[in-house]
View 1 (cartoon, one colour):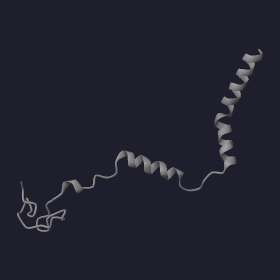
View 2: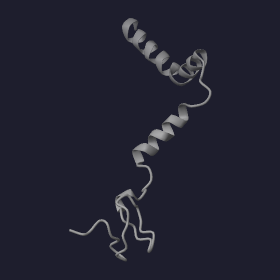
View 3: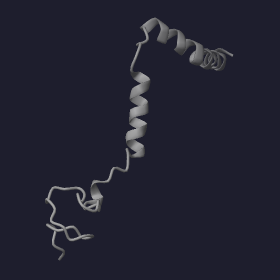
View 4: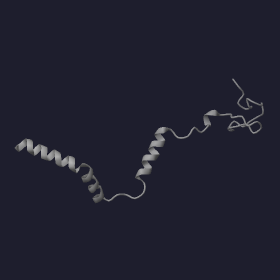
Amino acid sequence: MPDRSRCPKCGERVSPFAAGCAICGADLDTRRRDTGPTKTKQAGSWLSALTSGRTLNTPLWLVVVIIFFGGTILTAIVAFLTRLFG
C-alpha cells in the first residue's frame, strides 16, 4: 500500500487533505477533479430557467389552451354529436 503522507511523484511530505503536491504539482486525488455537471443536472437547470421570470396570468393560459387545443376539442364534440344524432 502506498504511503499517503508522501507525494507519489516526488516523495515530498504532503498533508492528507491536500489535493495536489506543493512542490511538483502532482494531482493527489483524481476523484476530486471537476468533470462538470451531469446531463441530468444540465436538463434540470435548463427546465428551471424556463419557469423563472414573469409568470403567466390564468386568462392568458386559457387563451393559449384554446388556440392550441380548441380546434381539436371542437372537432371531437362535433364528431361525437354527428355520430349520436346523425
